Structure formats: C-alpha cells, structure tokens
Length: 348
Image (cartoon, rainbow, N blue to C red; front, side, top):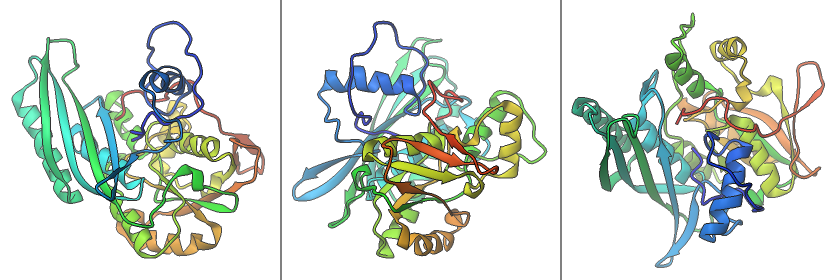
C-alpha cells in the first residue's frame, strides 16, 4: 500500500470544508488532501513521489516508510489485518529497491476488544515478519473509548537498506519502457468485499496478500535495469499508472486483453459494477523497465511461484504527459483516469 512521503506533487490550495471519506492514495479527493494540506503544512518535498522516502545515514542509503491499516473485516479470505500490516510495509520498502530490515508498530485499541483476537493478530504479524526476514523491534499501544476505533487500527513503519547503484524512482520512467505486472489483479479487493457484503461466489476468491520483496531481489540479481516499481494497492493498477505517468511526464498505453484477471474476480466485478483495473492488490508488483529487457524480466518473475502469472501489459510513450489509456478488446482506446474517491473503502 502506498505509504509515500506525501508523494503526489503540484500542491494547490485545498477548498474549505471537512475531511470526507476519500479512502486512500488512489483517488482525486485524497490527492487533493495530500497536495493541498499535508505537503504545504509539513514542508514535504514534492519531488519525493515514491512509496518510501530515501534518507542518507552514516554513508548508507535507507528507505523509510510508514502506513496505517484499517481493513474491515479484520479477517478475510487469504489474510488478516496483522499480516496485511507487515506485508504492506515490507512491500513499500521493496518499491524503493530496498532490502527490508526492521519494522515498528502501533496499535490503537478500542475498549472491549477481545484479547484473544488481539493475540491472533499479533501472532499473524510475527509469522509474516519471519516470512519476510524482518524484525518487529519497537511499538506502542493506545486504548480509546468504546465505539471510537472500530476494534483495532494498526500503524507500522519500516526501514530498509538500498544497495549501491540502485536507483528506483518514478523520475526514471521513460518512453520505450515496458510495463509488467507480477500476477493477476484485483484479488484482495474482491476477497474483502465478498466477506463484507456476505457474497458467495462459485469459485471463492482469496486475497493475494503477501510479500513481493523477493521478486524485486530476483530482478535485481538478474542485473535488470529497474526504472520504477509500485504495488497496486488502493486505486489498483489504474491509479498506479496515472501516478507514474504524471510524475514522469509521460503517457502510458495498456492493453486490456494482456492484463491478467482471474475469472472469478472478473465475474465478481461484473456483478458488483466494479472495474478490475481499479481494484486493489496486496501482493502484486508493477515494474517499469526498458522494453528490451521485458522478456528476460518476465522469465525471472515466472520462475518464482508468486510471479508465475507475470505479464507484459503495456508500454510508456512520449505523450501527452500524464495520459493513461487502455486498448480494449474492440480495438478502441479507453481513457483511464483517477477516480474521485475509492471504489472499495477500508480494504487495507
């Protein structure tokens, strides 16, 4: 999930009013909140448009990220709030090309939350951290009045080490780059939605919740020139493509037929009136790299179980700047824009 250092650029005045349910980094309302309020107030550098900030410390380059998790329900097919918090943070570090090192966590607990449930979430976090090879080294706990926190919210922060010579950033995306995805899209959003709405599909959909840093490491070890990496969380693939196209000043053309979507997810989206290109993932990776390296990158990804469904879904073009289109099965071009808000709130 995007935990960028208030990433989206070009701040402008925010209209008077109150905070609305914009839900995450994938929509125009949240973009306006970040650009118009947080960035000017905190003095954040608009050039830092990434899932993690990069800081220098003692001669080393560190990736640093923070994120909050409020998914409802807290347990869903394929995962729960605890492991989602760990994987989401580890994945954000990996998007900067970093090797994750350590995490911190904070729990906001509602009075009356069963300790048994809290213990299960904590155990899930430990299991996920062990899987990722990172340590949970520090944390905090606060309790609020009954009815003030919807059970439990988890905030995490993480640091990772960026090796010498690694430069993964939206500014490096350029015309001629290929756009790859590591697997089928939309599983997480539909898995959460199915439980929340009490929907039963003939083929159950499990979340793709999981780590992707090992995929990044494999691509790096293969000597591939990774220009940019993103995990398509809130706002899905469409929002990632829009953010990158705007940040890099390029256009992106995707091919709808090339985008992998599981049949059960596609059916669920059709029933619910959702566009799978905007539905969130929590264990997928979007890769931008030179077009000439696309086939080799696909071979690397497909050699790993979590990347077996990798696909080349589009290319970066000269312009117009910030424009994202998708070629439909009819051969027409459809404009992919940012949504005003989020199709599926509270999915991460």
